[in-house]
Image (cartoon, rainbow, N blue to C red; front, side, top):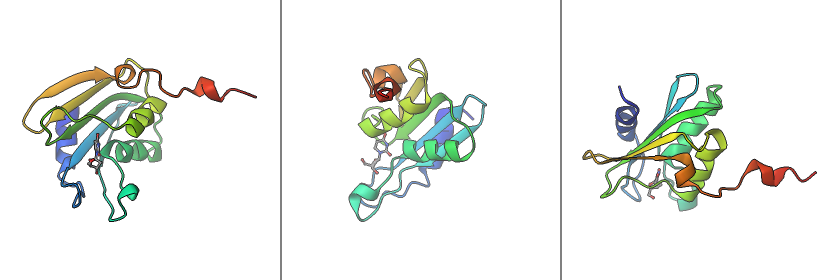
Length: 130
Ligand code: THU
């Protein structure tokens, strides 16, 4: 199954009763293992988590730390756009050249990269002030 089809399948499990906007994400680690996540909303709105965050949490829990590819899918008019926080979360574990496939459920696909999604992201270099 392609990464986007894997994301499409996990999207079915999304819990999005407030926004009604279900999102599925799949992350392939450098090891080859694929991890999935879906958005999980909460009645206290800020406590919800994005699909990408779920997939990355599963990856870290699974013992992988390097992202090789990302796919995200939603029932949106344009390929779904990851939020700023998720762009930073992806960038923590992926090189700028890593391909991010963004899709709509009706088949529109946009391929971009981590670097294009987060130019000038907050970098680990900023933290080396000892
Ligand atoms: N959402 C994601 O899970 N990933 C994205 O890339 C865009 C937005 C979720 C967050 C919230 O549950 C719902 O979609 C509406 O913003």
